[in-house]
Length: 179
Image (cartoon, rainbow, N blue to C red; front, side, top):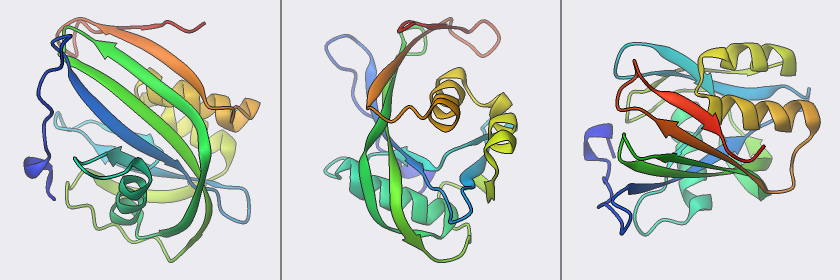
């Protein structure tokens, strides 16, 4: 499915489009974490864990395996319980985003990007400090929970909640709600 073919959910009772996303934390035998470099519509790039939208009728775990394979070429043999969850309410942008992040229990293959959405332009394993530094341009709701997992060991399924106000990239304001 290409980006142009991605199913856009109808607005829910709250008027927001509800997006379900699955995120993967993949760590190699040397303790390095896998990140992907994403090219956004405006031409900017940012690094994040691999993952993506759960398609209609698809389970989050199946979606996660598909997305990781498309974005990195790796085949994950199994996923653990949720490490953490992210919720972003963005009324001005018209969406509510729910992300569930899982850790890969094991994987096989070599990195080879074949992203049908043509968003992922690079993928690599990095030491924890480098990964956190590389995520500096990622949205706060991507960067903070992943750093909490990598540095503090957050893996209890807790929810990181955010509110995104504004209506454009120029006037957006992010507030963390769960602190």
